[in-house]
Length: 161
Image (cartoon, rainbow, N blue to C red):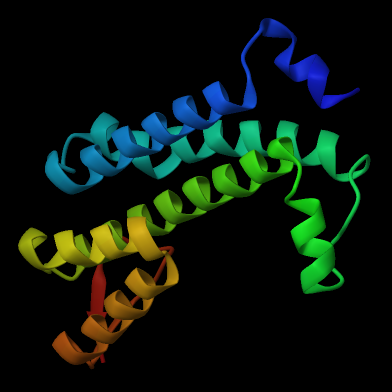
């Protein structure tokens, strides 16, 4: 299967880029501005949109990687790999999916720790724009605001040491 088969619907990589970016933006807007107590609004940016973006990534990356020049073994190899519009699209969609998923994780944990949405918003925006920088800011804020708080990923409650 070639990537051209995926785009047989007449949707170009540029159009997929636009659709994926708009879908991710919708997720970020829901995450930052809408109430998270409504289950559906919580699930959309946390699971639904990252899942859809991950499917697009899988289709783009897996069908392009094995037929593209370049690779992950050197910076030059990576540059060569990303010369393909299709693989560049896959890389972008990878960022969109993972950053939104991490943003939803940050929001969920911040809510459990009762961190104000006003404090969350700039961190979520940093996560949207600069991924790991937002994660570092959240982890640092969590340590400063509640150094004795431990959140279990498998529990819904916050336990204090």
